Length: 152
Image (cartoon, rainbow, N blue to C red; front, side, top):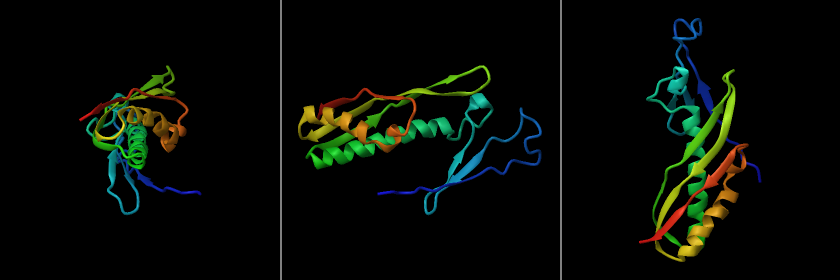
């Protein structure tokens, strides 16, 4: 089974375009049909608008949210009721002197509270969720999970 996802990215620049590296606008918009638009920019380190989401933020959030959704589905199928879920995910980029680079690692730290079900299985399902996560499976960097699961 094959699914396709589409988005449109628009950068409108400004009156000066990219004539001056120090001052050109790094803001852009991402739209997906029938969904809210995302206002993005470069990371502040790259002279972007720190108040907007940047590609690096979105990369880490995509991995974290994919893991969440895979995990919730597995728990529902295994009669484990989740009361709360919070993930303090973090990604690390290695930037080279020529400004090339890549993510070297993303660490997910989901903290889950279950209201019913098997606590040991709830912890083990994080491993299964990791293997089923489309986004993590598409990454060239290491994606690690450090889950904690407690009973309410």
